[in-house]
Image (cartoon, rainbow, N blue to C red; front, side, top):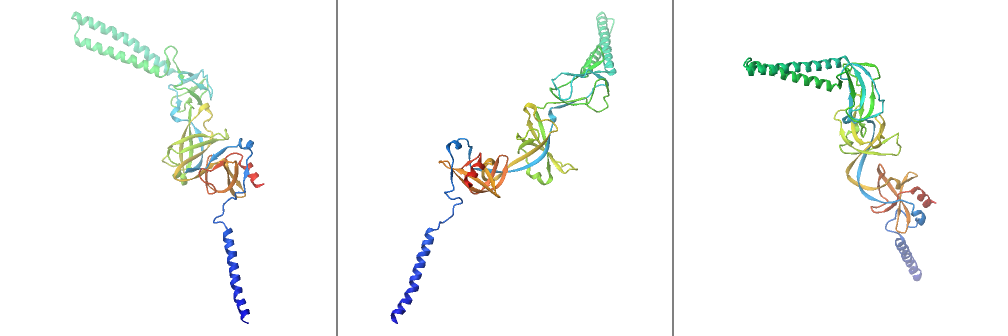
Length: 373
């Protein structure tokens, strides 16, 4: 009976020791933390494929907020001239069409006008009056030297002569301002700047009047243009002076024109409740045409930072974003990540990778398929 009791007591002790050893073995086999991607999930790039790929580096970048607006291409009003008729009459000899390029001083048309005949008559009268007063002045000066005229008579003749000189100069200026011809009573319509004829509201033999209020031509230098975008009231705080702007158009898919916000209106449109934002762009090759519709993406930096990669390095599969990293042995590994924001060709992410990691930035979807196969 005594031996049996000892065996019963020893049994639970031995079981406890065995359980302790098993538990210790379990803890010794566990890892302190689980890696997001096992080291065995690698795909080794063939050298021939690696040479064709584009690689980039994960960077720590300042966060950028962006907003996309609708807008249109407009003239640069600082480089636009509207040409109005200086006199009434009939316009002829129009030799330009809408869209033509004209040079500074080039004749656009010829106006035959009764007013120009009147200006010519005033010029002839001023010339005749000057000749008469010049003779009277010479006569008074000769008489004064002979003692037959007083100094007061000479002063009066001199004043009349000076007035005649001034009147002649005024008549010439009036005729010159109106582009007049002293022989035919007509004026030449010339362009004061070089540029394109962007508006034309007149035809040959049309009667025109100075009180009509309609311009004959509009000439615009399209070397740079304005992009006018509409900002809704809820987004006014997201746009600032100097913010970078990327402009795209339907006419040039995939082409991005870059500029900066240089003016923000201080008054909202009372009907549409939008604020107008202006971007000035250079226009080499005159690709951008007035009245084209445009999509304007305005970006502004913040005080926060986040990891950023090229957008081409991001992969989306089954509601999850992935990034592919590559090491010095051309071994590619995939990592899950979270997208914070995307601006242009740059995407801000969180988790999965670290700054300095080398990522696949081209044909990433193809490599991702190899990893999953």
